[in-house]
Image (tube, rainbow, N blue to C red; front, top):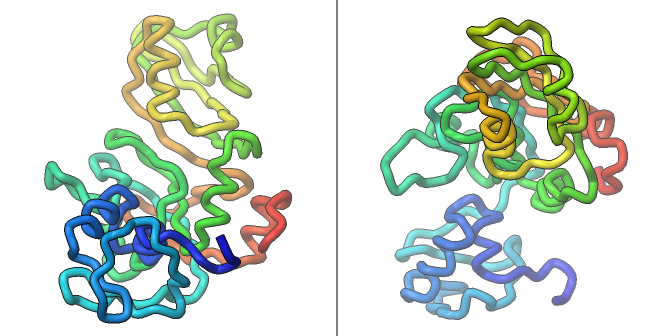
Length: 233
């Protein structure tokens, strides 16, 4: 594929309008026009910054300038653009601030903490690529007592017990990849239910005192320091 060209379904995702799968459905249904003509091939190559795209005859804004946000995801909010069950999404919370952004990985419905969103899909793909082993740090609360020996046997980069009793245990956990519900499955395998999962660090970025439902713009300088091995910042 020539430099700058992307498949139409991916372009709609990059522009922050639809997920990749939603874009495929919309294109095949004849709802998407490029430069005034209906296109039904999701793989049609376009340059997002140089074409006029419309969905249901409504023009799609061309991609905005480079932006990356740190967002404190609250509990009960889903990390998706639209939810078929009508639940609140991170993009509902962000409103216009989320236009043109994609989430870097996910936090599940009950999880809270640091979530990154960016207009730079190459950065998002690099961070979430397991081969780059970007660390993610979580504060985890589980039912029952987790001993130091049990924690050391967990399939995590690091697991430290901060406090433990027969009622519940509190741990600091570091992972180097972001598989779906990995931490919850990890503890379920040793007989403990996760009751609280809170991400406090992603790469070199920390949540600090950012409040639930709030966000802040990140600079390229911050991201270079947080992800020093990423070559394009």
